[in-house]
Length: 283
Length: 305
Image (cartoon, rainbow over all chains, first blue to last red; front, side, top):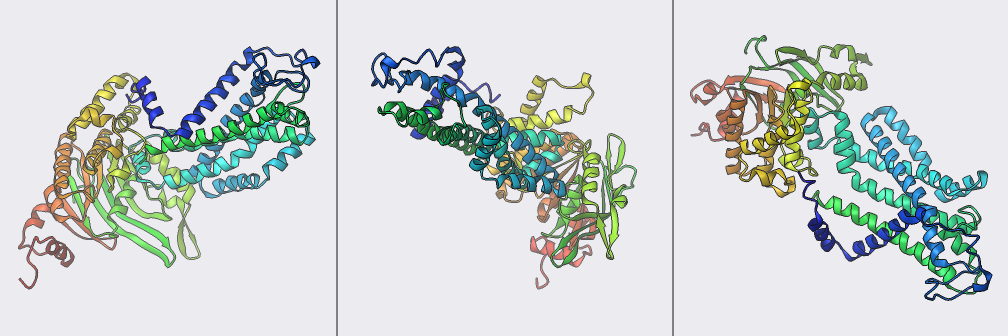
């Protein structure tokens, strides 16, 4: 019944009631998502784009964001660079939230020594310094963005699981969860719907978006540190900054750098805003 | 006591213990009671008298260690007797002169045994109405969910369809005398008053169609006028549904109004069993503690009067 009510009017109402930071960040996130979704439709050949006769051109009508040291369009590369982190980031975030939430729920529900030992293993993984571990993995195996995404997903599962486990444990003592049990709801339904979906969805959404932004961040960092990220000539925001940091012109590195900062900040604010909106219902 | 063959609930010699830093303490000490179909049994006692624990044991919801350590609980549901504690001795063992329980195994067994009884066999209304409703679901959804859980146990051809279920959910909100049931259906608990929450909770619990309802101090924390409404409502609905009720309270007036029989508990022991008629009779001989309770409520004069 409540689902029917979600209409255009409600969306506008929510929009008006939200803070400026949420409005701005959601615009940015929306733009990034749009870029990510239309990306497979854009054909781009990084080799054909090289044109040494138009090196380091300032932003103009034909090249909105100028060109880099090899005469490639910065705007087009920026757009195509979204592809590097978009799907890997989404997949990593999704699986981190899914597996982390699931494991946390299992630990919290089982309790006892089984739950405690799973929790201990997870905490052990959680103590690994993420960045160093990622660099290590990338030196051992041939680096690819998919590998980075997979490892980030793995590294975030423990922290998500721990939060969810604590939540499940504390909720187990709540009157309404006991009431659900007493009314004969299936335990699986209570865990998956009432606890994971209703109570933890805010938290899981926030974590999903956080992991997504982390993949972008780590891709940038690794590209800058060495050739661990997406390899030239294929564009990614990270290697765009890394390649053109010695460039004479400012735009080839400044524009992707600003894009990275704005996107990460917007993602975090957006995740926070969504989670807060959901939590407000409780009060 | 009514005889064992007709009672809905039959508790005999129930023992509940908990480990505390000062050793093991016996919270419920060989408590027995039984409830006949459609009967209201009142359990009267102060906080910590074990009244809540004895009823939670009935629902298998006791969480501390070691919890239920002895006795028998029989629950009759659809003409079938379920002995909830018959397997208990298998989970008990002795260690350093003290009786211990295999907690995990027992918990598993308890969940299995209770799975078909929760909701339809017995269900409960808790003390704090705000905390016993899910804060993130609308009231209507919650009533609907009880109905869905109940229907899930039925054979496929007799199940109510989704539409009939939501109609029934709305009917339940009307039956608990919500002023604007349609609005309440789509409201979240925080948008309702305490009294409305408790009435919603009654709707959620009774929509399971239980054979016995455990009402654990349902009026605590409500205004005097709202209290009276809730008590009247419970009495009417219980009669309509032919559902037995265990009514726990420390308010002796509510007890006299609602209950058919009353047991008085203190320090985990049953002190007295009386019929309500008997309790109303001022001249009859009473246990000293019951007398204190009656005096405290102003039902009989104090000694110096």
